[in-house]
Image 1: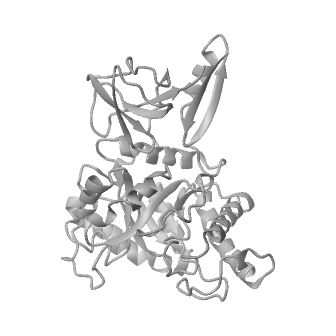
Image 2 (image 1 turned 180 degrees about the vertical axis):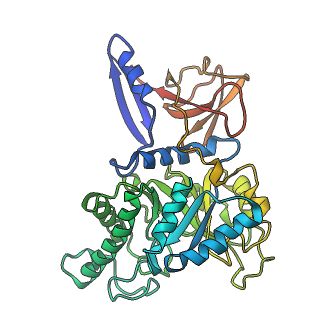
Image 3 (image 1 turned 90 degrees about the horizontal axis):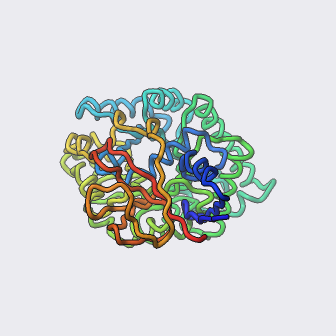
Length: 416
């Protein structure tokens, strides 16, 4: 019996087969699927997560453009201003549409559903009310343990809020909509009731919501997004790989150097698709269209954080259309607009299996040296005499270039 050990999304998978390789070929032909935090996630959710993982290795069409339409209660008007207005200006639709449930859920449902059916992606957040006293999100009183005490006032309020959100998310699920769900944003800052508090209590609160939504409410249309604010302690509150699908940073800045390490480097260690979950140029509070250049966003990603694969601007005055050079941003070759989304048309992977530390000769190559990409987008350059650690990698197929160039998944195992 021969055994291979594959490192997939941080998990070591042992696969053994006997005298023939038929079982191994059957295993490989099923295609690699990134592991969703919810094992029962809908097939489209898994496809979207796979797509996110594939983006950093592309040469163009590799950064998903996103725009918050508006807070839930104002989504209809906000959609016209921030999304339709951007299309009227640039001729392009963003790929990712966002909203926040805090000020209303019902108005968002037809907008998000129509967007999904038109081929776009959807992300939702909620600035939760404080369950300790029913106050606003910025009321920082109370602790994070009281909402988890069964029968307490805080627990009753908290479950009622979760039930309301779950009903909205379930309505989207019933319409087939996959949601990148971003709870507890900016938890490393002290401006929301869930922020800058005991990390163990925060993780417990995150896991309670995850289990309640997944198991109790049967929400299988969610991809879970971890989104600290740019600054310190960006990984301190991370609830663990089993509870997160996508990671990102909320960032409001006026210079691209703000996103230099260590925040970016620290977030890469989470081994999740990474982007700007909330973005705004500063200063923009006055709505001055000459304050911020939109094309700085993609220039910054290219220069300082090339593994980031998405961004979402906040509403006006931070929205793409309310700044300048929106056309330059939306037509950049790296940008994924709605019509360039390919998550639902990705072709099955082709696999080559090589043992760890074996020469990589024989993989498809046009050149004397090639580049392997990890599923997180990091690169390893190899030649016919090189060797690489065990893992799962992407390698460009021989021939072709650009966004349509296919990727070959290469599993490199170790052990006999």
